[in-house]
Image (cartoon, rainbow, N blue to C red; front, top):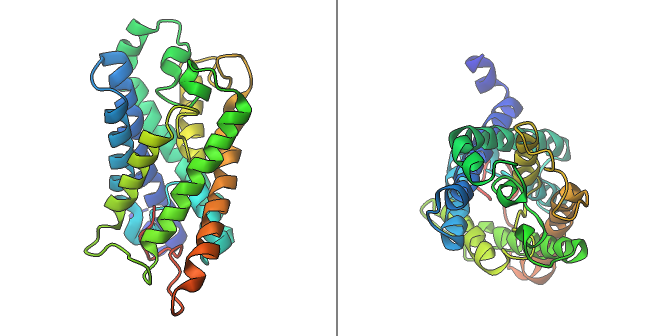
Length: 270
């Protein structure tokens, strides 16, 4: 089995995308569970944990797959950076499965604590696993949440292309993963209240499914009962394309010579 994975390039890429996204969710969802169930930390610790989760996930996957960890990244790279379209769906499925398994581990580890603070498994602790408009409490409607996810993911992809562009001021000494993680921290600190900054369909949908199968019957709806689950899937893909396209339009076409495309699988990206 291990030999087959080594010899089959796509299988190897999917394996590391699975593993990297699982790492991302272990740190991200784990930090939210610790805050809500254990009373340790706050919004800043959550933002930092999601950022470090991205960094560590990219370090896990970057050499083999490029460390996308996010279907919105895969789609944007396929559209603008030469990533193969045939790999987008397999990557997305591997990423979602990794997020699903990561969320199951968080649910298992924090299960008794989550039950103690929220025995009915309501939106109070649903946000450990998936996002809600206004984080389940603030008066944010679906249209605002949808726009928020478009903007947040556009920022993410614009900056990912900026820091992986070898003709721009790209990080050296293997620091790209750290810089991409810091981008996620900054987005969380500036764009975290309206829709929980999923900015990643796999990160949201995988844990949402995991929570549904482990007692959260309302996992696919928001606090008003609206079937909200599609918003963090569709809006980030749109936002990622907009952000990557904006970088191509506003920056990369003015750089002096052709560059190696940052979406190819042998280059680290977020």
